[in-house]
Length: 130
Image 1 (cartoon, rainbow, N blue to C red):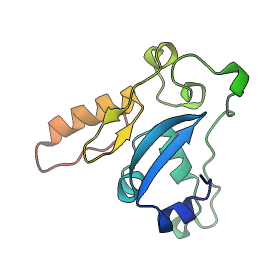
Image 2: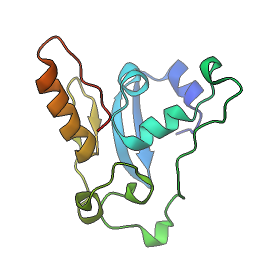
Image 3: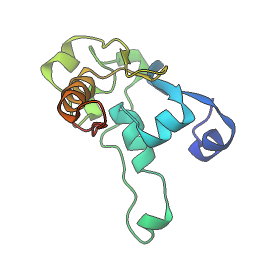
């Protein structure tokens, strides 16, 4: 267990991204770093410094981590998520399957991925942002 994604990228073959004590996303190193599906994973990766962002302010996920004693109903990430819907507030999401062992707990991104996958056809890969 670590918050150091640089270490994770160098030593882990399979990664579990957790938020508020639950698995938000799981997959191979390439799945997580190249095609993150959960908004929390996307935010974590967007906050990493890199040469392309040199001199620019790093991204910060809005809001605060929930108090473990007062977890929100529904998706634990919904208070901080830019994609949240009423569904996210009401129901704890299950893990959606993107294939090859890549799973993420976000119905909004999954539905968008399914639509774009259908629109792209067999050769195209969807963009994962709703």
